[in-house]
Amino acid sequence: MTDFYVAVGDTTSFSKTVSESDVYLFAGISGDFAPNHVNKAYMEKSGYGRLIAHGALLVGFMSTCSTQVKPASHPPPQTPRCVCSSRSARAARPA
Image (tube, rainbow, N blue to C red):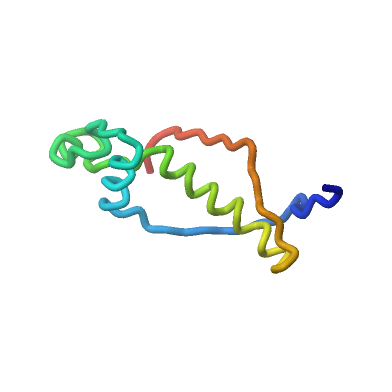
């Protein structure tokens, strides 16, 4: 493979409202049933006041963006599969 189809400065965007059902469904898929994700009554009494989405769920949205940037720059049939070998995210505090 000699062509690298993503250039410095290429951008894409993705937006989604994360619902309570998204959080519960992700808990079921991942097996992460920590109270901060699934115990609404417990979290309402906490300093956060509500459930917190899984960090890994948000990292999954990064995957969505990485697969969008390629088709935007090279429409089919030229679009190769996009593979992102490294991602990093830092959560300072819930929004």
